[in-house]
Length: 181
Image (cartoon, rainbow, N blue to C red):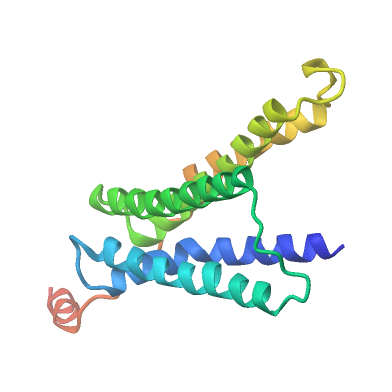
């Protein structure tokens, strides 16, 4: 069951990713370029986590071989590029939502709900294409197809019916003017 623990840890980390990424973008206090500044630090974090950590583990391994087949290297590099492009697109989606007048909370919920409902659907479809089920397309279990449909429906419902955030607190001078009226 270790796989499930690690999968749930990933769910937590990636579930928090969008929230903290958006908060970092806003925290840059630069409406025009803040998202790019935030992404720069995401890249630094990726370097620390995805380059230095495995390098240390590999160096410390007693059975380490530096032999790496080109196919594995290129596919892994492609996976990293896709991940980085996806992370960058998260920022672009959040920025476009904010420019469209959506509140930060609504942007974060909408963007991440669509991503985290849609990504498993893409993953399942591509996995079925690359590794067709025994017996062909007709052998795909109905509950599997229902799961894909429910993932799409879930992403839609969370995005469509997200709660509106509370109104921002009024500034003291605005509250005093309103009270006087």
